[in-house]
Image (cartoon, rainbow over all chains, first blue to last red; front, side):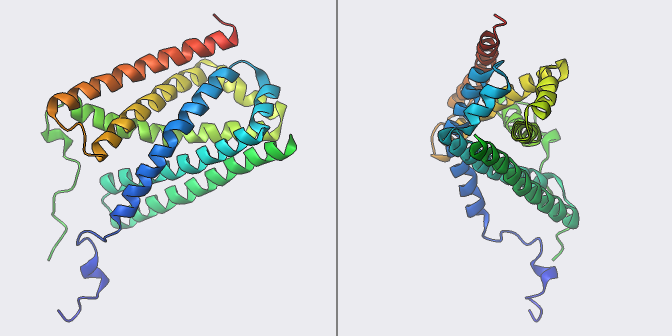
Length: 126
Length: 131
């Protein structure tokens, strides 16, 4: 094969041998999210109806801030890995698929950073 | 070698709906709903950092009927995706593949998700002093 290095031939020919890292990251974040999500849901229930001051004070404690940032990191990483697989399954036009996956990854990083920054603002403002 | 005409997933329409397939697609649907729902989470966090006036807007939206409906749907999505995610982790460990076990664990997940959602809302209403 004279031109076996050409991109046209490589495209769509199967595994790029990078699936394991994606799969493993999705499982690791899933395991981390089990306690983090339970903690978050229980905390939100405890805060129900308590108003701005209580939420602000709760979020500002070092323990809560750190857990919130862990939740944000693991949650957005897990979410974008999952949405990537959905896009790869349902969007079959090459350029559109890559564009969607890229946009989802940019959005996830931006939203995660904005969330973590909000938590830190509260933590350092307390 | 042409790759244009290969069959592509998913071919859901050729399968008879079963508890296994329905719960599988529900896992994906709730996961996607949660990913979109993070926008609400981010809005809530940024508003909390911005101050009480900004926070009051989010609080107002979340206590409106549409906000409450979204939160109920989102809380069910959280509990379903959490419970079924644990079911997936068991499969990843190579356990629970027998047909009867898969059906039973699926039913347990659905019941657990519904019960947890109801318990969470009763608890939240109690904390609000509405009960």
